[in-house]
Each structure stands twice: as structure tokens, then as C-alpha cells.
Amino acid sequence: MAASRTRSRKRARVHPWTDAPPLSWDRWQRAFNFGRSTWRPSWVVRPTQVDEVAALLDWAGKHGWRVALRGAGRSYGDASLGEGHILLDLTRMNRILDWDPETGLLTVEPGVTVEQIWKHCLEDGWWMPVVPGTMFPTMGGMLAVNVHGKNNWKAGTLGEHVRSLTLLTPTGETHTLTPQDTPEAFYGVIGGLGVLGVITSVTLQMKRVYSGDLEVQAWAVSNLEQALRDLDEAKDRFDYVVAWLDGLAGGRALGRGQIHVARYLEPGEDPHPARTLRMEHQELPETLFGVFPKSVLWRFMRLGMHRPGMRLVNLGKYLVARTVSHHKIYRQSLVAFNFLLDYIPHWERSYGSGGMMQFQLFVPKGQAYDVFREVLRISRREVPTYLAVLKRHRPDNFLLSHGVDGYSLALDFPVRPRQMPRLAAMLDTFHHLVLQAGGRFYFAKDASVTPQVALAFLGEETVRRFFALKDRYDPQEVLQTALYRRVFQPLRTMLALPRSGTGGNGSSTG
Image 1 (cartoon, rainbow, N blue to C red):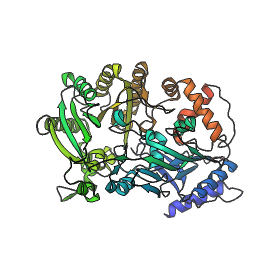
Image 2 (image 1 turned 180 degrees about the horizontal axis):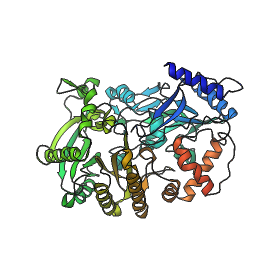
Image 3 (image 1 turned 90 degrees about the vertical axis):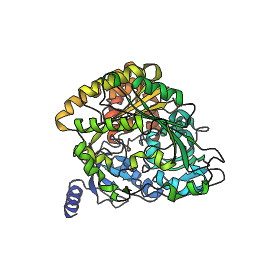
Image 4 (image 1 turned 120 degrees about the vertical axis):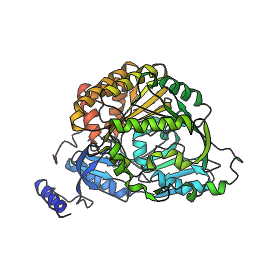
């Protein structure tokens, strides 16, 4: 703590301001991404009210400081990291502003988490229409990257269920955005990576459910071709479809794994809905077998985080899928099915001190088999993926969309200093394969996309429309994340787009 205070005083002496900032910010600290593979130092500020955010943005614009927005910091890349200036942590703006259990309309502040929402609404018979694989992200963070879930083909992205949102811009203006009245701004801000303004409130249409359980079915698939075919055939019959693939299997077993599908229960199917909708039925257990605390499991998982260890783990998972759970039908709580990533706290730390990197590629249906087969083959040879997840997707209308009529494949890689050149070269190869197939990428789960790759899959017209919104709402470029500076700022130069302001380029903290 003393070292932190010393560092803060030193920074203040080197970079004095003519008038004091509107909020206390004595936290000069390193902020990590979720995979703990990269970090950035910033002054962390945690407001609790909208007027505090407005005052800070005004101060930053006048003094040439940049501001990066951050929710729970669950992005695998650098979408929620700053670059040495102000990191605006919105997790304390976490109030539920309005809830109507008759209509299912919910209004919340940006720091409200998925966990808060289901605990508040589920007993009334409502569930979030789209959730990611963990319950801890915030509403503002999820909309900044427009999250999808295991039900993307059926339900689309989270942004498709937003009825309205309030946007505070660095110019001091407040805008109410809806898909009907302000479609250009609405579809640009959602998925706009948090650099067009601060979302201060969101009204979301929740989904009516008649049970706290889902009917789940699982079966093994012997190769990639079967996995793609089975997901496509299941997408119209079930509400959720997802597959786990063994990234270390080769030959005829390339892409083998297990399919999981689930559907909501209809009225009357659950004989005890009042019980299954209760919070006690949904809570994940804190211990393994009722004895061993899950909070320390990641330390033991580290022992197997290498190619031989993961080969055995994946083989064991496949054999269980092939025998014990093959075509098994059972009921599972909404929380247990959707938030598999939360079963083991801090699981991401099991990858070691270098952390982990995730790479998610989206490929149209007709090209998915060829691209994914080549990706899995290359990964086995160069840098093996320890976890591969396959999903079925559909396109959407959002400006910086990652959606395609096809599939996504998410790959997790351990970050080891000695293999970084190979990993970088491999991901560059993947970029070319996806672009040739007309595919796309997802900024929330990527830290390797270059400006050239972004321009290729977004298209010049989309990039120009994005910068038109940026110049309208943030002409001084006050809002800048590490992702924005890495990918989007160079695109201005590449497309010879003039800057409408000079903010964010003044005083620098390095």
C-alpha cells in the first residue's frame, strides 16, 4: 500500500493539473484482462453517480486526458484496458432502477451484473434472454461488445433485446437511443466497444420462463463433420446448442467431442416451478463432493496444463461422453447450464503465470468445415488449444457485428514466452483463412486482430460510419481503450480520415 501511495505522489508531481480532478483517484494500478495475459497501468476511478461521470469526462476533455471504460474486466483481450490515463470503473453504478414483473421490462445501471439480474428477476418467472458463459459481467460491458450465448441462432445477441438505453457523451450531452427512433446510433453504440459514450441506463426485455430448469440432452460426436452437422440439425429444435471439441485429437478423430442442447420447459412440464425458480435451487455449490473447496481447484489444475496432461483430460472427457452421458436426457438449472465457466472460481489462473489467450473465429456455414479443419490441424502441430467450443450463429444489424450465418470456434491457448512467436504466426495464418472464407472476428475475445484485418472483415464503409459516430459523440476522442488505440486509431490514417478534435493527444502519462 505504501508503495502505491509513493507511486501516486510521484505521478502527480510529474503531471500536475491546473485544477483538481472532480473525483478522488489515488489508485495508480495495473489492470489485467480476464485471461491475465496482458495488463495496462492506469488511474482507476470508481464513480457512483451519473453526474460524477459527466464531471470527469468534462475535466478529461479540458485537460487532454483519455478515459477508458471498464466493467467487470471479463474481456479476454484489451477491450477493457486503458493506456496510462484514466480507467473509469463503472461497477459501483450497479442499481436496478425499475422492474416490472408483469411485462418483464427491466431498467438497470451499467454496473449491474448478470448475477444481480437473475437473482432479482428469476423468482418472478423471468430470465435474461441472452447470457454469456459467466454470470459476472456487467450490463455496460456486455453491451459494449454485444455478447452472445449458447442460444445465438434462436435469440441473437443481447443487444437485440434492448428496448432503449441512455448515452452520456464526452460533450456533456445525454441521448436516449432506441432501435425505432435512432437506429444508426443504437446499432452503433451497442457493440461500439465503449468509445462512443457512457451507457448510463438500459431497459431490457426479459424472457418469460415457467421453470428454473432446462431439459438438457448430450451426446458424443466422433469428428468435426458430425459436430457441425448435428449442431445445424439441432438449432431449430432446441433453444440452446453448443459443442465441446477435443483440440488435441487428430486423424479421423479430428474435432471429436460432445454436443449439449437444451430447451425451456413449457407451462405445466415442471411440477414444482415455485421450487426450481427459487435462488436456492440455482446456486452453484462451493465445494466438490460436498467436501473439497472449489476455490483452490485451479491450483491443482495447473499440474495438468501441458500437452500430455490435457491429452489425457480430453480423452477422459470424450470417453465419458461416449459412454456415461451419450444421449442422456436430464434436467439442469438455468444457472448450472449457462454458467459453466463459474463452476471453478479463478479457473483462468490454472494456465500459469503467463495467462491464457482466446481466439474466436466466425465462419459462414458453407466454409466452416474446411476452415475449422485446417485451424485444428495447424493448432495441433504448432500451439495446441486446450479448450475448443463450437456454436451456431446468425447475422445481426449491429455496426461492428461479429455475426454470420454459420459457426464460431473459440480456442483457448496458454501464453508461454518461448512460444509467443509461433503463436503469433499461427494466429496470423488463422486471420487469412477466416478472411478468405468471408468470416469475422469478435473483439471481446481477441487481442491479435490488426487494423488491416479489422478493415478487411468490417469493410471500409462500416469503418467510415463508425468514425462518423465517433466524431459526432466524442469529437475530442476522450474515450480511448487499448483496443481502440491498437486497432481503430491506425484506421483513421489508413483511410485518411480527418480528426474532428485534438483531445486525448495532450498531456500524457506515458
